[in-house]
Length: 276
Image 1 (tube, helix red, strand yellow):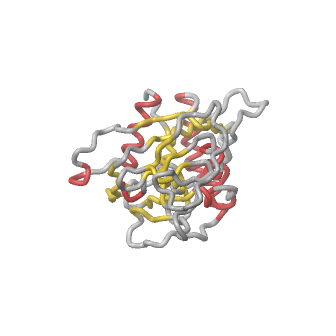
Image 2: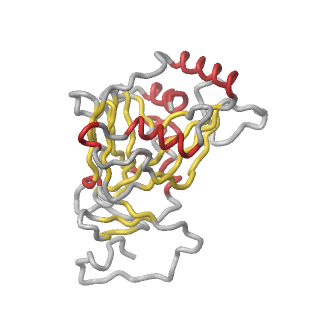
Image 3: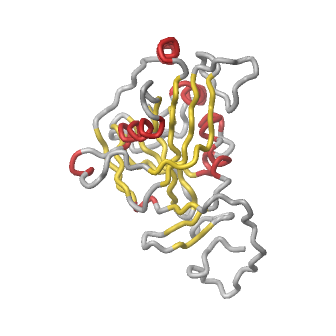
C-alpha cells in the first residue's frame, strides 16, 4: 500500500490495496506544512529559578501551600516533506521542552493551559493582529507523568510506595489549524523536530520527549500541501523526494542560528525531569 494519495501518485504501477486495517482507530489527524505558519519573536521571558535546587525548593513551597502541582504541555504537530515534526522550545542551546507550564492553583485546567500557551507562543504587536487569545484546540491527553517527591525524575506511573505525589504533568495533543502566527521569547528557540530524531533518543531529549513518537503512533495522519491537497497519508509515510527532514530553527535564540546538536546530555535529562 502506498503512502502517496491517488491524486498525487505518478507511478504507472498502482499499489495493491489490502483489506481495511483501521479497526478501532482514532480519528485521522490532518497535518499542515511548516511553511503555512508564521513565526516571530517577542520580549525575553527570564527563568523563574536560577538553579535546579531553587526550582525544587519552589515545588516544596507550592506543595505545602496548594498540594499537587498541575502542569500541562502541548504536542504541536505539523509536517515537512510528509514527515511529522514537533514544535519544541530550546533554552540556552541545551534544554528542550514542550510549550506549556504549571497551572496556577485556582486555574481551570483547560483554560489555564490555554493561557500558559499564550504566554509562551501568542504573537504580540502588529504580527498578532487578527489572532484571538486562547485560540487553541486542545485534543487528547496523551500521557501523564508523575513526580513522586521533590526530585529531578518523573515517571509515567505512580510508584507503589507513593501516596502523595508532588506533581502531575499532562501532555496534550494540540491540533494546529491550517495557518497560525506564533511568537517565541528572545531567550528561547522554537524548533521543528522530526519524529525520527526523537525516537529512542533518551540520551539527548530525556524519557518524556523521546516517548512522543510512541504516543503519536496511535493516530493516522493526512499530509496536506500548501494548496490544501492531501498528498500523502500514513501508515508508513515516507520522505518527499530525496530530501531528508531535519531539525529546523524557526524563531528566537538571538543571532545564533545554529542549533546546538551537542548539548550536555546530563543537563538535558535534568531539564526533562525538573524544568518542564
